[in-house]
Every structure is written in C-alpha cells, then in structure tokens.
Length: 227
Image (cartoon, rainbow, N blue to C red; front, side):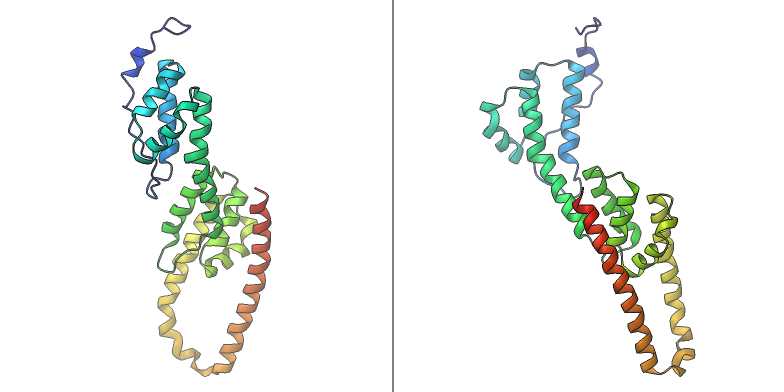
C-alpha cells in the first residue's frame, strides 16, 4: 500500500499492457521510444514499484535492438534514474538531434501539397518540442515552395500565430492552382509582349526574390543556431 493506505496494485488492472519495444526507428511512428517510456513510467508510478521490479519488467518487454542495448548496460544499471538517463540518451535524444537536422534541411517536394508537407513538419516540431510560434513560422517559410514562401514573407509581420501562417500558406497554394488553370486561356493576350521584355521581367522578379530569400535565410540560420 502507498502512504494513503490504498493498494496501488488494484489500479494496475485498468492499464493497457505494456507493448514490446524493439528499439528500431520507425518513420511512421517517430515518437515510439518516448511513448513506450511514458507507459513504462506510468506503470512504475501507479504500481509504486521498486527499481528492481520495474527494470525487470522493462527488460522483459525489450526485443531486437532494445534487447541488445539492455544487455550491454544491464550489469551497470540497477537504478531507475540511471536507466532513464541512458534510455533517453540512446533512443530519444539522438532522435531529437536527427529531427532538428531534418527540420533545418526540409524542402517541400513539387508533387506534395502544403497540407501534406506541413503534417511532416509539425511531427518534427512535436519530436523536438518546438512550441515558439515565431520559430515555427521561420522554419515554415524556409521549407515550403519558394513561390509560397515569398508570399508568406511579405505578410510575416501580420501573422498573429503559427496557425495563421499555415492558413495563409494553404490559401496561397489554392490561389496558385486556380490561376495556373487560367494562364493558358489568357496566354494569347500576352503574345504582344516581346520575348525579351518577358525575359527581363522574369529576371527582375528572380533578383528581388533571391535577395529577399538570402536575407531571410541568414536570419533563420542565426536563429536555429541559437536553439
């Protein structure tokens, strides 16, 4: 019984059985290690289990890579706090470092919609624990398609939240798709412009965008390096 006189073992029957943990990375479930450890800790706390017992339960629910890892540290790990530190170092912190790298390098593929891309980006935000809206907006602008990023950058100061920036990105994408269908029907009206005039206009747009993009990326890199 605990200090209140309640037999905590009674409550254990209401918990879901602890699932085996194999220690293998899974892109479909990047929080697998963290979620497993959370369930293990909940079992320990509710059952008021001593370190020896909870570590035995953990060991019996490890497979493959996780089992090999446990065997390598079993003789030197008899305390829960030490196990927690080593587990996070091996299976969680490394994943966080990898996720930061992915966030900084992510670029929206041409064939992927903003919504699909943001689902992946937000999963990475969740893994690294990024909650600051200004930082999330900065990474959003740096990673979406350049045409959308340009529009977002123009309105960046008006965004009240990260969710606001997301809504704008999706709206910009819809407008681009809409007017992309209109372009062929009005192409004939633009034929009176010389090819050289079009070329100059395109280059000027590119120069302006490139200048803004380089300036923005330098600010983003400075921000990410300070995290």
